[in-house]
Image 1: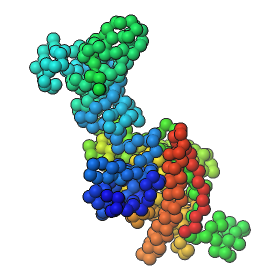
Image 2 (image 1 turned 180 degrees about the vertical axis):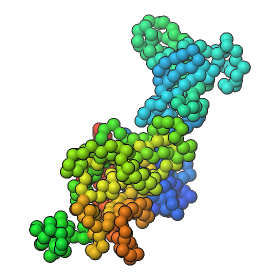
Image 3 (image 1 turned 30 degrees about the vertical axis):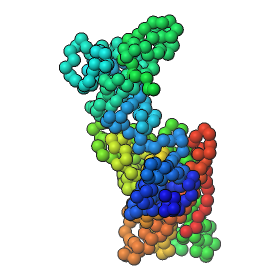
Image 4 (image 1 turned 90 degrees about the vertical axis):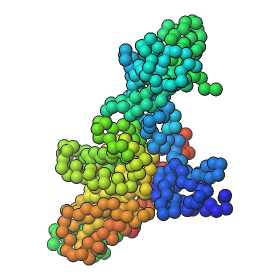
Length: 217
Length: 261
């Protein structure tokens, strides 16, 4: 694979946008930071040239300096998992600010989103729920917003839609989504998830109701 | 020479076929690039071409301020053009919606849209703020150079680094005119993608005497752009190297060079 790879710049050297890096073949493909035109690879950002090996192909990428991650990853797409902080809570919805996306890292500027009450999930234990988007939950089995999330919590949510002119719409209605980091109301220490609907403070032992995200193994 | 100011001081320059600031016809002014001068924005650049100094900052990609402005498949590029009141010899406050600035902003926007891969940032807004700090001719070109540097510093994906330079005068055709020369001669500003050889902007407000004159002026302007590119590319490369090696992150690079076409 390295025999038919001929780059005009050495790996780990610095390239500027517009530099022609070489030709690309079926096995060496343009990756992030590069663009292809008429069979040739060009750098599109200023940074370090690197080669990423995948199973059958290798990707040529140009990585910008570390504190500027790829700008294209800062866009929020539908279906992405995002990390958000709860700002305020009302009877029908929770207002959150999205700070980071799973694939893109931290956003430059946090954006507003809401989680509607219907999108938090059902209060029936998680193992019984098969359809996360089911609308046949009556009021008794859907969460009260204040019992699911509280202001100041950090939540992991999935983007449902681009929403209206002011905010995205998120959902928590999956087992791995929910509150990920919360401070106890009384003692201010970080709480630990006890079950899918409870968090407990390790210092005082007081339990608080939250829709907890399933811990990643 | 009929101009009195030439007769008094610069007869030596005239004898040697030099311009009033001692340059040859094919010589651009001393250029200086500093990237990363503003802290809280995605990218910034301060470009000096001779005595003309322009600061450009790039913010984005962010959410559009008004959602109705956003495009579903590409980013919206907004350019704001302003001049500091101290940029000319007499201090003057210029309102932001001055017609010349709106036109200049539109030209910078179109020049950069030809280079930035906007389809990679759908439903986003990229804002470029350009401030003229000191004006001595060639402000549109300096603005495009500054915006281009700031865009590369911000890490946005571009096809090529946009370089701009002006050319003018009939005989001889001069490159990179200063303010005095701009007032007396025809002046064509030209921006191109130097490695691809594509012109993304050419603007001229005066009448050219013939078709051949247009060819000559355009050709000279393109040569000037390539000279600007040589300096800009070195500055960007050095800045990228410094940023990688510095622990804290953004590094300020000052690179000054004189270039002869």
